[in-house]
Image 1: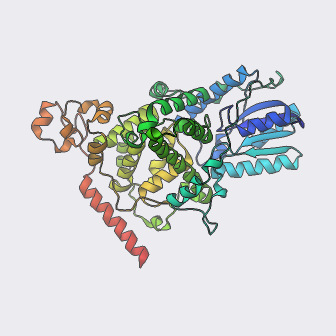
Image 2: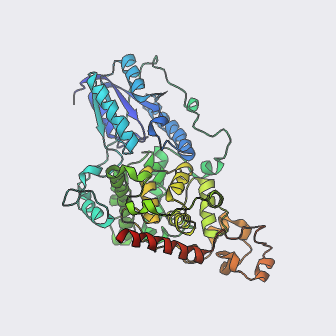
Image 3: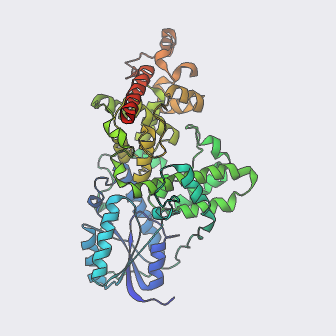
Length: 485
C-alpha cells in the first residue's frame, strides 16, 4: 500500500504494545514517518483517573514500550497537558497530517476522544481510530430487539457464535524510523507516576510490566495452568489463574492474541475444558465493556434503580478495618492484605471480600469499587463496575440478593489447608486448620496453646457473620417488597 502521508502521529494510551496494534499498523501503512506519542492527561479521565497501583504499572509499561521502540530505531515522545492542545502542537511541529489511536470505552474517554476527533478533522487532519482492546465492539452485539444485553449467558452465546470469525493478530513491525531529534519529549520520571513513599516493593516483586512479560505470562499459563483452570481457578493458594488481567488492561497483550494462542495449543480433549472456561472469562470482560458502554452511569449508580433506595450504612471505622485487613474474619483479611501488598487479589476472594463489605457491613459498593480502583494493578473501570454491582445484587445478571458469601465456609471449601490464610495472616499460623478460618470459635485452650489473644494478636470480628447476614436479608427483602407494591 502506498504511503499517502509524510508524517503520522500514533497516540498510545492503554495499548502499550507493538504486536496486534491496529492504530500503529495503520499509521505505518499510510505514512512515511510514524511518531509514537503518549500524552499524560489523567484529569481528562475524571472522576476515575488512574489510581496509585495503576500509575505504578503505567510507569513501567511506558518504560518497556519505549525500550521496544528504541530497538526498532524509534522512541516514544512523552508530553503532558490538554490532549487536544498537545496534539495540535505536535502537528504544528512535525507537519503530521494523520493521527491514529485505538479506542477507549470509559465515558470520560469517549467524550474526550470524540471532541479531539472532531477538532482535528475540522482543521484538515485525517483521524483514524481502531479497536485493539476487545473481541467485539460494544455496539455490534445486541438482542434480537436490537437492545443491549443485561444477562451474560445470551450475550456470550451470541458472541461465541462469532468467535471463529476473529481475524488473526497483526504482526509487530520490524523497523520504525526515528522521529527528528528536535522533537522534544519529557523524561518518564517527570510524570511522577511512582510513589514518593515506597510502598510498592511487594508489587515490584510480584509483577513485571511490558509486552514481552505479557507474552511470557500467556505462554506459562498455556503450558502449566490452562489444563486445570476449570478447578484450580477457584483456589486462592494455587497459581491457577492466568495473571493476564493487568497486561490486558494496559494493552500489553490483546484478547485476540490470547484467543489465538489458546486455540492453537488447546483443541484436544485433555485441555479443552480448561481452555473453554478461560475463554468464557474473556467473555465476562467483553460483557463488562458492553454494559459500561450502554449504561455509563453504572460506574457510580446501580443498574437496578431499586437499589437507589437501599439503606447503605456509613461507617468509617468498619470501612477502614476492611481496607486494612483487620476485620477479624481471616479469609477477608487475607484477601485485603494480598491486595495491599501485591496490587492484586484472587478473583474468588474478590467476590468474598466484596460480599462482606456490601452485605455483612452494608457499606455501599461504590466505596469498595473506589478502594479497588486505587489499589489494584488491573483496576479496570468496566470489570470493576460489573464485579461490584454483581456482588451487591444491583447490576446486570447480578447475584441474587440472598446470595451472601460465608467467608468461613468459603475458606473451608477453597482453602482447605489454610495455605492462603497462613501466608497472609502469619499471626494465626499456630492455630490448627479446624480453627484458623474462625478463630473466635476456637476453645480458649486452643488459642492459649497457639499463643493468640483475640483483640491483641488478631482482631475480634468487627461484625457477627450470622446476625449481619440476617440483617442484610431483611433489608434486601424490605427493598424488594417496597418496589413491588
